[in-house]
Amino acid sequence: MRRTECSQSIVAGEAEGRILSTTEALSFWGGVSPEDGKVIDVHHPLHGACMAGAVLLMPSSRGSCTGSGVLLDLILNDRAPAALVFSGPEDVLTLGALVAAMMFDRPIPVVRVSEDVFQALSTCSRARIIPSHIEADGRTIPLAPPSTGALELTVEDRAKLSGEFGAGVQQAMQIICAMAAQQGAKRLIDVTQAHIDGCIYASHANLLFAQKIAGTGAQVRVPTTMNAISVDYANWRTQNVPEAFGEPAAKLAEAYVEMGCRPTYTCSPYLLSSAPSAGETIAWAESNAVIFANSVLGARTPKHPDFLDLCIALTGRAPLAGVYLDEHRGAELVIDVELPAQVDDAFWPTIGYLAGQRSPDRIPLLRGLASATPSRDDLKALCAAFGTTSAAPMLHMEGITPEAASSNASGLPRRTIVRTDMAEAWQQLSAGPEQVELVALGSPHASLAECRAFKAALAGRKRHADVWVIITAGHDVIASAAEDGTLAALQDAGVTVLPDLCWCSISEPVFPPDARTVLTNSGKYAHYGPGLSGRSVRLGSIAECAEAAASGCSPRRNPKWLV
Image (tube, rainbow, N blue to C red):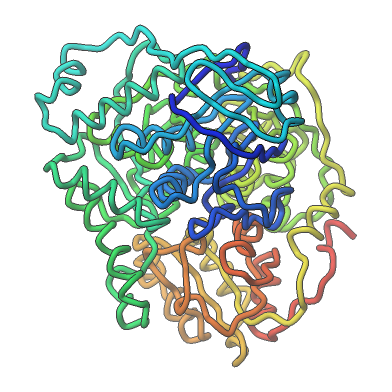
């Protein structure tokens, strides 16, 4: 990862405010309310704090690529931090600030400082930032100007930048070049495909951005898939979703389709037939998908922020930086995992969640797991949970993932995950009442194998009358489940299977309003769910989810592999 040696202005601007400081990264999507700028991540040290008008000090961001859209909305509605100060590399919120400045003329300062300066500022009460320096409680900290970089552009790149391909492509190239400069990229690289995360209706700002670009007539230049959206596109009106939400959410999806994106509407694009192969250079957003693509498939993509994903799709070009480069794909940390006997599918999100906590800003090598022979779905769950607690775009697992053998563990820092750690994480992710009103599967979107496993675990039983059971999945998976009878069996058991949207974007009334406690097989949703839904959200295995679906109860106890 890039380390900061001096203090530098990344996005120029002027601001003054109280200092709000944390040593733990935060995802703005699922972690910050766009309505008032308060931290809603119940697991974060700043939970309940309001960042509106504050100079926010944070090592980096983590989690969802959609944080850029949340920040843009906060800026446009005067609820944003006055400035952002990072001690390490950060792309997601930086991109949101760049878009605010370049497309909407609403700049807020983004600054990157050394660890020593970060620590010093953390002890101050207020700060004033101007392009040349920071003033804080009598201290003056000089700032280097934003990097312009010597970016080597091809003839076609320059034509796009000059407007020869239209205003939308020109704006996209301007944003790409600005990001390339702050990432230290020397040139751009071709990509073979893209995946859009900005189609989630995180805020009205997402719609403003998409419609502004679509209005230029711009079209994507590479095959481009779309993430889950915020409504069941064909059915939201019959589901009684309010027009005030459903209409703009649908229009956001339509804007991306208008630009040539495929309406795949899935947060598991690696389950599609178009999934990339090892070594393929792609441009994906959506944190779980990025980590799976790099780690399990061996494809190459940084964790591109929302908005940058579309810019790259429109130009076919991305900054040659980060994990596109061999030198940034190796392990930077070793995590030795104590492997219990007889692990089940709930073990893998627990380990992913803990691994992200152990490695919040660097690529880890996990050791000790190979003998458990994780399935593709186990790795899917691990990657999603890892992306919730870490900013790293990939991980390695010794004896499992394709590039693990190329990582030299000699001399790297070491961490451990032992049973006591697992028990602590389980208690954190599984706290809540035993009575369950909603079973939620499909975050990320469920695979056909997961749908079949849940059907098998139900063993012919129907859902309890007081329990909602909802699975979210991509259209391809739902079609395959219909072909082999899995879908009919689930529906006969009272299970609702929904396309297009996923748990991190579901809202009432599709999210059952009367449900107070949720059981999920997703470590990602167990983390984000309480802040997003206001409910207790507990983690469990597929078997435990099936038991709760049939009985309405899930006893609070450790899984067998922790007994």
